[in-house]
Image (tube, rainbow, N blue to C red; front, side, top):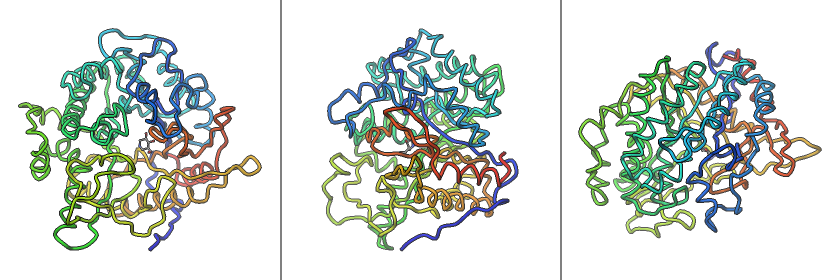
Length: 466
Ligand code: IFM
């Protein structure tokens, strides 16, 4: 079975639709020891033998810390009017609390000014996984106090940048920080304790709520959002076992984050599933009110979909060589539908994005939505200095088509940010996977706009560049 490519034409999007590109600090900045930046949990994980596929780290990455001006020129040259970037907590507060590092804030100050000078609207993410190592040493997201430290950091950063940055995302993909970081261990801090993952997820959500309150209470108006990675989950058959497998995966991946933020409750069925691991005594009175603090927008990162079946007997509990990130799902298998896959091995299911967006409207009455990440990795080839990345273009077209289908169904989607502006450090995969619409030659740091970059710029232009 294949999915039909769609080509969004001019006029498929509202006139004021926001067209942008996205990156994250640790994935592009490099300069991990410069100007007083403290160590982060990803510096620590990278130093662990075998943790990163190609043995690399973030010390140079795309050298964006030194090349930010030309990178902003590049964004402007693509005609983009918005840039989603993240701020490194350990640059701003090297130990995560108390001391503020002015040189770190100065960097983002210059970056934001540079955006505004080029007519690019900043969309800042406060936490894209680079927790200060000093806070990890105190228990990281397993420690409730980290949520309060995060709110302090949010307030401090907004105090400095809030006269120019209006759009704030608190966390990026808290599922990854909690479950990849603490259950499968493929992300920092690299733990494999399912109960820790659940506790960390609650403290991340609490941190989101506290930071949202701090941002709303700041001296400048803030549009506060949260970015979640949602998957479309389907059952392989109508059997009770398959339906239950889909319920559990959807519950952990999607509802565990959406329900508390948008409805003020944790999903009862997943609380029950988690009971074998934790009694959730980490959830204190008032936490859910804090977590469900008003959200001005929700960021959706969408890449793929899971088609799942329930097994009669538990399978070997591994994804690749690691434990599964979903807690207590050793009897759940993902089923190969024979769909085309990206270079990450992820099924390409654009209609899953439409379903996800429509569900957010129907089940959650969600606030305005942004697609804060969507994109694909491929084994790009450079031919005569050019990258003719037809697969990435097809993926882009299909997913933009899926967004316009959701808009046609009445979903309030305000913008799209391509992941990613440029090839970068793909976490546990190191530099071995490329998501950029711009190629980075890591030997020379030369940037080359791929065909997909030109295609994206043309679609944005044809649709009015909001
Ligand atoms: O590179 C990541 C990004 O940091 C978070 N969302 C998914 C992307 C691709 O894996």
